[in-house]
Image (cartoon, helix red, strand yellow):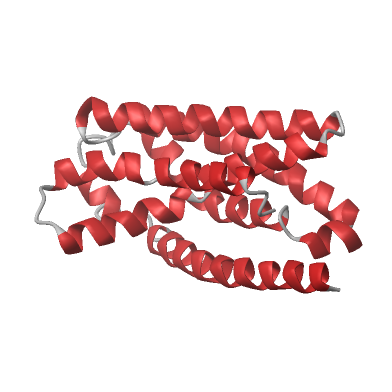
Length: 210
């Protein structure tokens, strides 16, 4: 009974976090849906918007990010896993395809053209490569029915998926606390967006919080 209560509380906490994250992502996506090339992030990328492959990659990455975030989140619902196992598998495959076939290649293109000179480019290339690798390993271990490793790799993969939220959160926090140029802010934020997530993922795995 105690275990059921704990699992229910976990689901409720993560459901709340996911609701907030979904709202933030949806708000951002709706802003870009007008295809205004001066809107928010695009206003800082005027040197790149004429590069069609970058612009297409950007919009595809933005518009699919919400589905990736939600599909990945469902994989940690114990209720879904226990009562709707087939749905868990279907949504898991949606997540894998979204990351490996859509978000990874578009993210890679965006990383090459990232602002903030080589520190930012390196950060996003590492993030994208690890995201691909952890997601691929999560899928492979699921096929091998090694569910312990599968869960560990999914935690790592989703920690990088969630960087879509933490990246923007850290940008707000850093700019509010420090007086820093946009260039240096971007370089710092590129690393802060995913490194703390990975450290938290490893902490969760080591302490078996899932």
